[in-house]
Amino acid sequence: MRLFIADLLAILCSLFTSCTDLIEYSPFDADVSSQDINLDHIFRIVRNPVADQDTFRFAVFSDVHEGYDDMFDAIKDINRRGDARFIIVNGDITNAGLAQEFEWYARVIPVSENPLVTVIGNHDCLANGLLIYRRMFGNPDRSFVTGNYKLILFNNVILENNLVSPNYEWLREELKGDHYNIIFSHIPPISFDIGSLHRIIYNNIADSTNTRMAIHSSAHEYYEYDYNGIHSLITTTVKEREYCLVEAFRGQFKVSRVKF
Amino acid sequence: MLKIIILFLGFAPLAAQVSDSVDQGRSRLVYYKTQFAGNLGLISAGAGYEFPVRKLWIDMSLGYLPKHVNGVRVFTLSLKPAYKVADFDIKRIESGWYLGTAINYSFGRNIFGSMPDYYPLDYYWPNAFHFNPFAGTRLSLKKDEYKKNKTYFYAELGTVDYEIWFALKNRQVNLVDIFNLGFGIVIRPNLNRDRYYNKESD
Image (cartoon, rainbow over all chains, first blue to last red; front, side):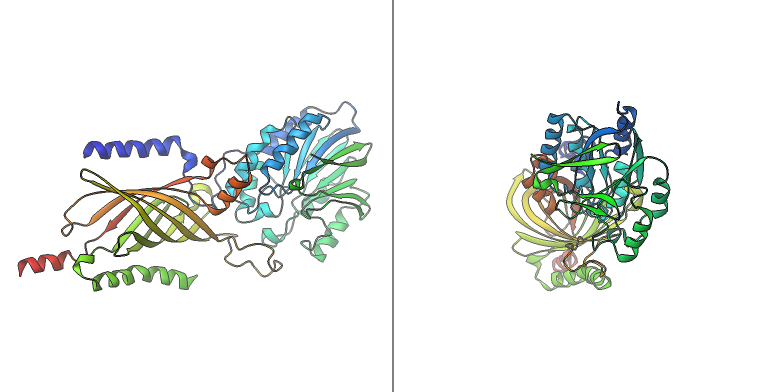
Protein backbone atom coordinates (compact mmCIF):
# COMPACT_ATOMS: atom_id res chain seq x y z
CA MET A 1 0.00 0.00 0.00
CA ARG A 2 2.83 2.40 0.87
CA LEU A 3 4.31 1.64 -2.52
CA PHE A 4 1.00 2.52 -4.18
CA ILE A 5 0.71 5.82 -2.34
CA ALA A 6 4.32 6.63 -3.21
CA ASP A 7 3.55 5.92 -6.87
CA LEU A 8 0.44 8.07 -6.71
CA LEU A 9 2.36 10.96 -5.16
CA ALA A 10 5.08 10.58 -7.78
CA ILE A 11 2.50 10.77 -10.57
CA LEU A 12 0.87 13.82 -8.99
CA CYS A 13 4.24 15.54 -8.53
CA SER A 14 5.23 14.89 -12.14
CA LEU A 15 1.87 16.28 -13.28
CA PHE A 16 2.48 19.41 -11.20
CA THR A 17 5.94 20.02 -12.55
CA SER A 18 5.62 18.97 -16.19
CA CYS A 19 2.07 20.08 -16.92
CA THR A 20 1.83 23.51 -15.37
CA ASP A 21 -0.48 24.49 -18.20
CA LEU A 22 -2.96 22.02 -16.80
CA ILE A 23 -3.19 23.90 -13.53
CA GLU A 24 -5.82 26.64 -13.77
CA TYR A 25 -6.95 28.52 -10.71
CA SER A 26 -9.71 30.57 -12.28
CA PRO A 27 -10.90 31.78 -15.69
CA PHE A 28 -10.33 35.26 -14.21
CA ASP A 29 -6.70 34.62 -13.31
CA ALA A 30 -4.14 37.01 -14.79
CA ASP A 31 -1.24 34.60 -15.27
CA VAL A 32 0.34 35.00 -18.72
CA SER A 33 3.37 33.41 -20.32
CA SER A 34 4.58 36.35 -22.45
CA GLN A 35 5.51 39.88 -21.46
CA ASP A 36 5.44 43.19 -23.34
CA ILE A 37 5.14 41.65 -26.78
CA ASN A 38 4.40 45.04 -28.36
CA LEU A 39 7.75 46.41 -27.27
CA ASP A 40 9.69 43.74 -29.20
CA HIS A 41 7.63 44.29 -32.32
CA ILE A 42 7.86 48.08 -32.13
CA PHE A 43 11.65 47.74 -31.82
CA ARG A 44 11.64 45.70 -35.02
CA ILE A 45 9.68 48.45 -36.82
CA VAL A 46 11.79 51.30 -35.48
CA ARG A 47 15.12 49.50 -36.07
CA ASN A 48 14.41 49.12 -39.78
CA PRO A 49 13.39 52.56 -40.99
CA VAL A 50 11.85 52.88 -44.43
CA ALA A 51 14.20 53.82 -47.25
CA ASP A 52 11.77 56.47 -48.43
CA GLN A 53 10.82 58.32 -45.27
CA ASP A 54 7.44 59.34 -46.65
CA THR A 55 6.13 56.12 -48.14
CA PHE A 56 5.24 52.81 -46.60
CA ARG A 57 2.41 50.35 -46.39
CA PHE A 58 0.95 48.51 -43.43
CA ALA A 59 -1.91 46.10 -42.81
CA VAL A 60 -4.59 46.56 -40.18
CA PHE A 61 -7.35 44.29 -38.97
CA SER A 62 -9.38 44.05 -35.79
CA ASP A 63 -12.07 42.38 -33.69
CA VAL A 64 -10.49 38.95 -33.65
CA HIS A 65 -12.58 37.78 -30.68
CA GLU A 66 -12.68 33.98 -30.98
CA GLY A 67 -11.64 34.02 -34.66
CA TYR A 68 -8.05 32.81 -34.30
CA ASP A 69 -8.31 30.81 -37.51
CA ASP A 70 -9.37 33.94 -39.40
CA MET A 71 -6.50 35.87 -37.86
CA PHE A 72 -4.11 33.07 -38.81
CA ASP A 73 -5.35 33.13 -42.41
CA ALA A 74 -5.16 36.94 -42.59
CA ILE A 75 -1.55 36.92 -41.41
CA LYS A 76 -0.69 34.15 -43.89
CA ASP A 77 -2.20 36.26 -46.67
CA ILE A 78 -0.26 39.34 -45.58
CA ASN A 79 2.94 37.24 -45.50
CA ARG A 80 2.20 35.99 -49.01
CA ARG A 81 1.71 39.50 -50.36
CA GLY A 82 4.95 40.68 -48.78
CA ASP A 83 4.23 44.38 -49.30
CA ALA A 84 3.21 45.38 -45.75
CA ARG A 85 5.93 46.58 -43.38
CA PHE A 86 3.99 45.71 -40.28
CA ILE A 87 0.55 44.74 -38.99
CA ILE A 88 -1.64 46.57 -36.50
CA VAL A 89 -4.37 44.58 -34.77
CA ASN A 90 -6.76 47.29 -33.72
CA GLY A 91 -8.29 45.81 -30.58
CA ASP A 92 -10.82 43.26 -29.36
CA ILE A 93 -8.47 40.31 -29.44
CA THR A 94 -10.67 38.53 -26.89
CA ASN A 95 -14.34 38.03 -26.13
CA ALA A 96 -14.27 38.36 -22.38
CA GLY A 97 -10.82 39.62 -21.41
CA LEU A 98 -9.75 36.23 -20.06
CA ALA A 99 -6.10 35.20 -19.79
CA GLN A 100 -6.61 32.03 -21.80
CA GLU A 101 -8.02 34.05 -24.68
CA PHE A 102 -4.98 36.36 -24.62
CA GLU A 103 -2.72 33.28 -24.62
CA TRP A 104 -4.42 31.78 -27.65
CA TYR A 105 -4.22 35.09 -29.48
CA ALA A 106 -0.52 35.47 -28.65
CA ARG A 107 0.13 32.00 -29.98
CA VAL A 108 -0.85 33.13 -33.50
CA ILE A 109 1.41 36.23 -33.50
CA PRO A 110 4.65 34.38 -34.42
CA VAL A 111 3.00 33.29 -37.69
CA SER A 112 3.54 36.85 -38.89
CA GLU A 113 6.78 37.51 -40.76
CA ASN A 114 6.25 41.20 -40.08
CA PRO A 115 6.15 43.01 -36.74
CA LEU A 116 2.63 42.91 -35.29
CA VAL A 117 1.45 45.50 -32.79
CA THR A 118 -1.70 44.98 -30.75
CA VAL A 119 -4.05 47.77 -29.70
CA ILE A 120 -6.43 47.30 -26.75
CA GLY A 121 -10.18 47.00 -27.36
CA ASN A 122 -13.26 47.26 -25.17
CA HIS A 123 -13.73 43.47 -24.89
CA ASP A 124 -10.09 43.19 -23.82
CA CYS A 125 -10.84 45.38 -20.80
CA LEU A 126 -13.55 43.10 -19.42
CA ALA A 127 -12.82 41.19 -16.20
CA ASN A 128 -9.06 41.54 -15.53
CA GLY A 129 -8.27 42.14 -19.19
CA LEU A 130 -6.60 45.52 -18.73
CA LEU A 131 -4.12 44.05 -16.25
CA ILE A 132 -3.49 41.07 -18.54
CA TYR A 133 -3.02 43.36 -21.57
CA ARG A 134 -0.51 45.47 -19.61
CA ARG A 135 1.45 42.37 -18.71
CA MET A 136 1.34 40.79 -22.12
CA PHE A 137 1.62 43.83 -24.42
CA GLY A 138 2.73 46.70 -22.18
CA ASN A 139 1.20 50.12 -21.75
CA PRO A 140 -2.00 50.48 -23.85
CA ASP A 141 -1.08 54.15 -24.47
CA ARG A 142 2.05 54.02 -26.52
CA SER A 143 3.60 55.70 -29.54
CA PHE A 144 6.50 55.12 -31.91
CA VAL A 145 8.00 56.87 -34.89
CA THR A 146 8.89 55.38 -38.25
CA GLY A 147 10.08 57.66 -41.00
CA ASN A 148 8.10 60.87 -40.81
CA TYR A 149 5.13 59.17 -39.23
CA LYS A 150 4.18 58.84 -35.60
CA LEU A 151 1.87 55.96 -34.77
CA ILE A 152 -0.08 56.54 -31.57
CA LEU A 153 -1.87 53.65 -29.85
CA PHE A 154 -4.53 55.25 -27.67
CA ASN A 155 -6.69 53.41 -25.15
CA ASN A 156 -10.06 55.17 -25.45
CA VAL A 157 -12.15 52.45 -23.78
CA ILE A 158 -14.40 54.02 -21.14
CA LEU A 159 -17.32 51.77 -20.18
CA GLU A 160 -15.24 48.61 -19.67
CA ASN A 161 -12.64 50.61 -17.73
CA ASN A 162 -15.23 51.41 -15.07
CA LEU A 163 -15.81 54.86 -16.61
CA VAL A 164 -12.20 55.90 -16.04
CA SER A 165 -11.30 58.67 -18.45
CA PRO A 166 -8.81 57.98 -21.25
CA ASN A 167 -5.44 59.67 -20.84
CA TYR A 168 -6.20 62.75 -22.91
CA GLU A 169 -3.26 64.76 -21.55
CA TRP A 170 -0.88 62.08 -22.82
CA LEU A 171 -2.59 62.16 -26.24
CA ARG A 172 -2.34 65.95 -26.38
CA GLU A 173 1.40 65.77 -25.73
CA GLU A 174 1.91 62.99 -28.27
CA LEU A 175 0.19 64.97 -31.02
CA LYS A 176 2.65 67.84 -30.69
CA GLY A 177 5.52 67.93 -33.15
CA ASP A 178 6.03 67.77 -36.89
CA HIS A 179 5.28 64.13 -37.61
CA TYR A 180 2.39 62.83 -39.65
CA ASN A 181 0.37 61.48 -36.73
CA ILE A 182 -1.82 58.40 -37.00
CA ILE A 183 -4.09 57.53 -34.08
CA PHE A 184 -5.12 53.92 -33.48
CA SER A 185 -7.96 53.74 -30.97
CA HIS A 186 -10.46 50.93 -30.92
CA ILE A 187 -13.67 52.86 -30.22
CA PRO A 188 -14.71 55.28 -32.97
CA PRO A 189 -15.44 58.75 -31.54
CA ILE A 190 -18.84 58.60 -33.26
CA SER A 191 -19.76 55.50 -31.22
CA PHE A 192 -22.32 55.64 -28.41
CA ASP A 193 -19.59 54.19 -26.12
CA ILE A 194 -17.96 57.61 -26.20
CA GLY A 195 -20.25 59.99 -24.40
CA SER A 196 -20.79 63.51 -25.66
CA LEU A 197 -18.43 65.02 -23.07
CA HIS A 198 -15.59 62.70 -24.07
CA ARG A 199 -16.35 63.38 -27.73
CA ILE A 200 -15.95 67.12 -27.16
CA ILE A 201 -12.67 66.61 -25.29
CA TYR A 202 -11.32 64.32 -28.03
CA ASN A 203 -12.40 66.70 -30.80
CA ASN A 204 -10.57 69.54 -29.07
CA ILE A 205 -7.37 67.51 -28.91
CA ALA A 206 -7.26 65.69 -32.24
CA ASP A 207 -8.14 67.54 -35.43
CA SER A 208 -6.88 68.04 -38.95
CA THR A 209 -4.02 70.28 -37.76
CA ASN A 210 -2.25 67.56 -35.80
CA THR A 211 -3.70 64.22 -36.95
CA ARG A 212 -3.46 62.88 -40.50
CA MET A 213 -5.38 59.69 -39.97
CA ALA A 214 -7.41 57.93 -37.25
CA ILE A 215 -8.07 54.20 -37.40
CA HIS A 216 -10.86 52.70 -35.31
CA SER A 217 -12.79 49.41 -35.15
CA SER A 218 -15.47 47.90 -32.87
CA ALA A 219 -18.42 48.39 -35.24
CA HIS A 220 -17.73 45.16 -37.18
CA GLU A 221 -18.39 47.14 -40.35
CA TYR A 222 -16.15 49.01 -42.74
CA TYR A 223 -16.37 52.80 -42.92
CA GLU A 224 -14.07 55.40 -44.40
CA TYR A 225 -15.07 58.95 -43.65
CA ASP A 226 -13.97 62.40 -42.63
CA TYR A 227 -14.30 63.16 -38.93
CA ASN A 228 -13.31 66.53 -37.51
CA GLY A 229 -11.18 67.03 -40.62
CA ILE A 230 -9.32 63.74 -40.04
CA HIS A 231 -9.20 60.96 -42.61
CA SER A 232 -10.88 58.23 -40.53
CA LEU A 233 -11.23 54.52 -41.04
CA ILE A 234 -13.27 51.91 -39.20
CA THR A 235 -12.06 48.38 -39.91
CA THR A 236 -14.46 45.48 -39.93
CA THR A 237 -13.90 42.28 -37.98
CA VAL A 238 -11.29 39.90 -39.34
CA LYS A 239 -13.97 37.21 -38.95
CA GLU A 240 -15.49 38.76 -42.11
CA ARG A 241 -12.29 37.51 -43.79
CA GLU A 242 -11.11 41.03 -44.53
CA TYR A 243 -8.20 43.25 -43.62
CA CYS A 244 -7.17 46.71 -44.77
CA LEU A 245 -3.96 47.70 -46.45
CA VAL A 246 -3.04 51.32 -45.78
CA GLU A 247 -0.56 53.01 -48.09
CA ALA A 248 0.99 56.17 -46.71
CA PHE A 249 2.51 58.71 -49.08
CA ARG A 250 3.67 62.12 -47.89
CA GLY A 251 1.04 62.28 -45.18
CA GLN A 252 -1.79 61.09 -47.40
CA PHE A 253 -3.38 57.67 -47.10
CA LYS A 254 -4.95 55.24 -49.50
CA VAL A 255 -6.94 52.36 -48.00
CA SER A 256 -7.53 49.07 -49.83
CA ARG A 257 -9.87 46.40 -48.54
CA VAL A 258 -8.39 42.94 -49.00
CA LYS A 259 -10.56 39.83 -48.91
CA PHE A 260 -8.78 36.56 -48.19
CA MET B 1 -24.01 38.24 -2.24
CA LEU B 2 -24.62 38.05 1.56
CA LYS B 3 -27.60 35.78 0.99
CA ILE B 4 -25.49 33.44 -1.11
CA ILE B 5 -22.77 33.24 1.55
CA ILE B 6 -25.36 32.60 4.27
CA LEU B 7 -26.87 29.91 2.09
CA PHE B 8 -23.44 28.43 1.60
CA LEU B 9 -22.55 28.51 5.29
CA GLY B 10 -25.89 27.01 6.12
CA PHE B 11 -25.45 24.16 3.68
CA ALA B 12 -23.12 21.97 5.76
CA PRO B 13 -25.17 21.85 9.00
CA LEU B 14 -28.33 21.37 6.95
CA ALA B 15 -26.75 18.43 5.21
CA ALA B 16 -25.61 17.08 8.58
CA GLN B 17 -29.17 17.25 9.90
CA VAL B 18 -30.37 15.27 6.92
CA SER B 19 -27.71 12.70 7.60
CA ASP B 20 -28.54 12.39 11.28
CA SER B 21 -32.12 11.76 10.45
CA VAL B 22 -31.44 8.74 8.27
CA ASP B 23 -30.86 5.27 9.60
CA GLN B 24 -27.52 3.67 10.26
CA GLY B 25 -27.40 1.92 6.92
CA ARG B 26 -27.42 5.26 5.26
CA SER B 27 -24.67 6.75 7.36
CA ARG B 28 -21.91 8.94 6.01
CA LEU B 29 -23.91 10.75 3.40
CA VAL B 30 -22.36 14.06 4.35
CA TYR B 31 -18.83 14.82 3.33
CA TYR B 32 -16.37 17.66 3.51
CA LYS B 33 -13.84 18.42 0.86
CA THR B 34 -10.96 20.61 -0.12
CA GLN B 35 -9.55 21.05 -3.60
CA PHE B 36 -6.47 22.48 -5.27
CA ALA B 37 -6.90 24.29 -8.66
CA GLY B 38 -9.49 23.00 -11.14
CA ASN B 39 -10.74 26.56 -11.77
CA LEU B 40 -12.07 26.82 -8.22
CA GLY B 41 -9.26 29.04 -6.99
CA LEU B 42 -5.89 28.14 -5.56
CA ILE B 43 -7.72 26.30 -2.85
CA SER B 44 -11.37 25.63 -2.19
CA ALA B 45 -13.30 24.03 0.62
CA GLY B 46 -16.87 22.96 1.06
CA ALA B 47 -19.38 20.33 2.02
CA GLY B 48 -21.53 17.93 0.12
CA TYR B 49 -24.21 15.31 0.28
CA GLU B 50 -24.11 11.90 -1.28
CA PHE B 51 -27.52 10.56 -2.18
CA PRO B 52 -28.29 7.18 -0.62
CA VAL B 53 -28.13 5.42 -3.99
CA ARG B 54 -24.39 6.22 -3.80
CA LYS B 55 -24.31 7.08 -7.49
CA LEU B 56 -24.99 10.76 -7.23
CA TRP B 57 -23.57 13.47 -5.05
CA ILE B 58 -23.55 17.23 -4.93
CA ASP B 59 -21.36 19.65 -3.10
CA MET B 60 -20.98 23.33 -2.63
CA SER B 61 -17.62 24.93 -2.07
CA LEU B 62 -16.00 28.31 -1.86
CA GLY B 63 -12.70 28.83 -3.63
CA TYR B 64 -10.12 31.53 -3.16
CA LEU B 65 -7.40 32.80 -5.42
CA PRO B 66 -5.25 35.18 -3.34
CA LYS B 67 -3.93 38.33 -4.94
CA HIS B 68 -0.27 37.49 -4.26
CA VAL B 69 -0.41 34.51 -6.65
CA ASN B 70 -1.01 36.34 -9.92
CA GLY B 71 -2.15 39.82 -8.96
CA VAL B 72 -5.90 39.26 -8.88
CA ARG B 73 -8.18 38.23 -6.04
CA VAL B 74 -11.08 35.97 -7.05
CA PHE B 75 -13.64 34.15 -4.93
CA THR B 76 -15.57 31.34 -6.57
CA LEU B 77 -18.76 29.83 -5.28
CA SER B 78 -19.31 26.43 -6.84
CA LEU B 79 -22.23 24.03 -6.98
CA LYS B 80 -20.93 20.73 -8.19
CA PRO B 81 -23.12 17.73 -8.93
CA ALA B 82 -21.47 14.50 -10.07
CA TYR B 83 -22.61 11.06 -11.18
CA LYS B 84 -20.62 7.89 -10.68
CA VAL B 85 -20.38 5.97 -13.94
CA ALA B 86 -18.13 3.08 -12.94
CA ASP B 87 -16.60 1.33 -9.93
CA PHE B 88 -13.40 -0.60 -9.86
CA ASP B 89 -11.65 -2.09 -6.88
CA ILE B 90 -8.05 -3.20 -6.77
CA LYS B 91 -7.40 -5.33 -3.69
CA ARG B 92 -7.85 -2.92 -0.77
CA ILE B 93 -8.31 0.13 -2.97
CA GLU B 94 -11.79 1.27 -3.73
CA SER B 95 -12.10 3.46 -6.76
CA GLY B 96 -14.54 4.85 -9.25
CA TRP B 97 -15.03 7.14 -12.22
CA TYR B 98 -17.52 9.97 -12.25
CA LEU B 99 -18.74 12.78 -14.47
CA GLY B 100 -20.22 16.13 -13.57
CA THR B 101 -20.30 19.82 -14.16
CA ALA B 102 -19.57 22.60 -11.75
CA ILE B 103 -21.67 25.72 -11.90
CA ASN B 104 -19.35 28.48 -10.78
CA TYR B 105 -20.11 32.01 -9.75
CA SER B 106 -17.07 34.21 -9.31
CA PHE B 107 -16.63 37.42 -7.36
CA GLY B 108 -13.91 39.90 -8.09
CA ARG B 109 -13.03 43.17 -9.77
CA ASN B 110 -14.90 43.70 -13.04
CA ILE B 111 -16.79 40.40 -12.64
CA PHE B 112 -20.53 40.88 -12.82
CA GLY B 113 -23.57 38.73 -12.09
CA SER B 114 -25.60 41.45 -13.76
CA MET B 115 -23.99 44.12 -15.84
CA PRO B 116 -23.82 47.67 -14.39
CA ASP B 117 -26.47 50.17 -15.44
CA TYR B 118 -24.13 52.20 -17.61
CA TYR B 119 -24.02 49.43 -20.20
CA PRO B 120 -26.76 49.36 -22.81
CA LEU B 121 -29.27 46.56 -22.26
CA ASP B 122 -27.99 43.14 -23.42
CA TYR B 123 -24.65 44.67 -24.45
CA TYR B 124 -22.74 41.86 -22.67
CA TRP B 125 -23.62 38.59 -21.02
CA PRO B 126 -22.91 38.71 -17.26
CA ASN B 127 -19.47 37.18 -16.91
CA ALA B 128 -19.60 35.79 -13.37
CA PHE B 129 -21.16 32.45 -14.32
CA HIS B 130 -19.22 29.61 -15.87
CA PHE B 131 -19.92 25.93 -16.36
CA ASN B 132 -17.01 23.61 -15.76
CA PRO B 133 -17.69 20.05 -16.99
CA PHE B 134 -15.30 17.48 -15.57
CA ALA B 135 -14.45 13.78 -15.39
CA GLY B 136 -12.93 12.50 -12.19
CA THR B 137 -11.60 9.51 -10.38
CA ARG B 138 -11.40 8.91 -6.67
CA LEU B 139 -9.44 6.48 -4.59
CA SER B 140 -9.95 5.28 -1.06
CA LEU B 141 -8.79 2.51 1.18
CA LYS B 142 -11.40 -0.06 2.09
CA LYS B 143 -12.01 0.14 5.79
CA ASP B 144 -14.47 -1.08 8.31
CA GLU B 145 -17.72 0.54 7.24
CA TYR B 146 -18.75 1.59 10.77
CA LYS B 147 -15.61 2.36 12.67
CA LYS B 148 -13.67 4.88 10.63
CA ASN B 149 -14.14 8.07 8.76
CA LYS B 150 -13.75 7.60 5.05
CA THR B 151 -11.11 9.57 3.13
CA TYR B 152 -10.99 9.85 -0.64
CA PHE B 153 -8.31 11.33 -2.82
CA TYR B 154 -9.60 12.56 -6.13
CA ALA B 155 -8.33 14.01 -9.39
CA GLU B 156 -10.49 15.72 -11.97
CA LEU B 157 -9.88 16.61 -15.59
CA GLY B 158 -12.07 19.58 -16.42
CA THR B 159 -12.68 22.37 -18.85
CA VAL B 160 -14.64 25.62 -19.04
CA ASP B 161 -17.66 26.39 -21.19
CA TYR B 162 -16.04 29.08 -23.36
CA GLU B 163 -12.94 26.95 -23.93
CA ILE B 164 -15.07 24.20 -25.47
CA TRP B 165 -16.65 26.79 -27.78
CA PHE B 166 -13.24 28.17 -28.78
CA ALA B 167 -11.87 24.69 -29.46
CA LEU B 168 -14.86 23.82 -31.63
CA LYS B 169 -14.45 27.03 -33.63
CA ASN B 170 -10.68 27.01 -34.13
CA ARG B 171 -7.94 24.83 -35.53
CA GLN B 172 -5.56 26.99 -33.50
CA VAL B 173 -7.06 25.73 -30.23
CA ASN B 174 -6.40 22.05 -29.70
CA LEU B 175 -8.45 19.79 -27.49
CA VAL B 176 -5.49 19.34 -25.14
CA ASP B 177 -5.44 23.12 -24.63
CA ILE B 178 -8.81 23.25 -22.97
CA PHE B 179 -8.31 20.77 -20.16
CA ASN B 180 -7.12 21.44 -16.65
CA LEU B 181 -6.54 19.38 -13.54
CA GLY B 182 -7.90 19.65 -10.04
CA PHE B 183 -6.93 17.54 -7.02
CA GLY B 184 -8.63 17.16 -3.72
CA ILE B 185 -9.50 15.26 -0.61
CA VAL B 186 -12.95 14.22 0.56
CA ILE B 187 -13.61 13.23 4.14
CA ARG B 188 -16.84 11.52 4.99
CA PRO B 189 -17.17 11.46 8.77
CA ASN B 190 -18.95 8.51 10.25
CA LEU B 191 -21.65 10.46 12.05
CA ASN B 192 -23.27 7.28 13.36
CA ARG B 193 -20.09 5.85 14.87
CA ASP B 194 -21.02 6.75 18.48
CA ARG B 195 -24.51 5.36 18.01
CA TYR B 196 -22.94 2.14 16.71
CA TYR B 197 -20.65 1.80 19.71
CA ASN B 198 -23.51 2.57 22.10
CA LYS B 199 -25.54 -0.20 20.51
CA GLU B 200 -22.63 -2.60 20.87
CA SER B 201 -22.28 -1.81 24.57
CA ASP B 202 -26.02 -2.38 25.07
